[in-house]
Length: 158
Image (cartoon, rainbow, N blue to C red; front, side, top):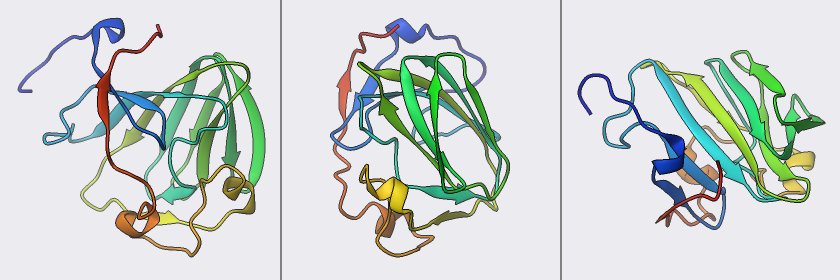
């Protein structure tokens, strides 16, 4: 996608799978943005957005609708619409849908050629299927038991 573009989230295609909810990506998977990653993740209650992890780059999150839990630095916190979470580099975290319905989270993260990630073991995250069995920095290992099958979908939100 060369140059600038605009997209309305209600018209954007989402991808959904059995493990990590639905995602509206604003970039092409084969041509990611160079400096910033951004997406909206929609999670059902009890559904994590991935595995408990920490990166060497900052990430920021804004809950747009619904409720979720964030497990950050080994602690669980309940979030609701308009709550903002900042994760400096090295902060372990994961989000899990909560409440009575779907939760939508705007997720923004820095990008770098020197990006590093560590998936660490967390008893709290394990309650939601969001912990690895053994620490790793290899995404293929971290997600070996998750299916990567994603289907195009339209979200009921916004």
